[in-house]
Image 1 (cartoon, helix red, strand yellow):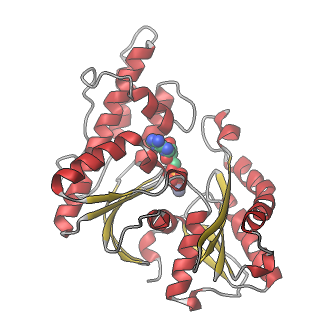
Image 2 (image 1 turned 90 degrees about the vertical axis):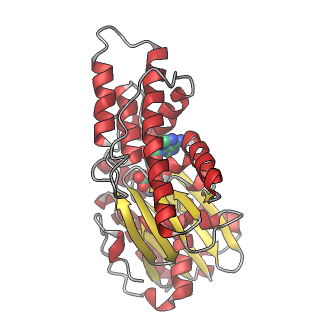
Image 3 (image 1 turned 30 degrees about the horizontal axis):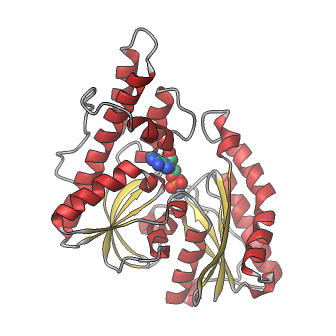
Length: 341
Ligand code: KG4
Ligand code: ZN
């Protein structure tokens, strides 16, 4: 079965073809980062318009890569939510229009389920069950994953997501959107002893997170500089921020593994691309004989492959999930626990 996946929930248009027998056949992505950079963040209306422009050329690109004709697609999976309403509507309408024209079934996919399952696209995928640390721009969650659709939320952020904290702190340091990779690069040159920033909820008894206080701590340090901050000082603040955030993510992930009795940690989402996070998780896990799995770097941030894959996994388990009801509705807010099993 060949599934076309369409991702358009935020600022990336991603299309991919996944074959349940032969794996990922093709994927193509257009990132709108350069367009939004000028505004310091994603402008929803511009995002929607750009998705419209990109979707069909990207479809032609993946079909050409896979040397397939569109009639060979067996089902279309699209990101139904959560995300920006207008951006989601573009992907949904392209998916449903195309599926209707081709007389193929469609399936709406939860964006976070796409991220959650994306590490299974790697060459050495983890086996179920595992603990998942999902760290994206909009979400920070620890979950127990027993199989496709079998997700138990163990803890989540009470305010800012990890990616959001990265982006906001980067902005305070004068770095452009999205600041995650930039602040991470800057932190490499920072002195780890210069700024000891707070580790919010590190010792709370639960598996929840809170990162808005950490961002405020960055703001306070920046404001306390009366003169211009020199590059070294910026790097020191970046280092203080990255170390604090990662300490919390690592500690809570280890607690989740210990509490569940599971030995596999699977990281997903944009912040999963972060090299300092990967190094810290690897070290902490090795000490305790846990294994850590990551998605391929290109599948950490938003992409169509994870949507095609999640669609294929869902349909393999339950073909009845796909419908020929092309009257779509998107779900900008959609808690993961409302997903059917
Ligand atoms: O998963 P994703 O592409 O989008 C959402 O679904 O939210 O994640 C985007 C987030 C952004 O906040 C971005 O700054 C962050 O992931 N990010 C990183 C890195 N690469 C992307 N954060 C830290 N280090 C990175 N290397
Ligand atoms: Zn995402």
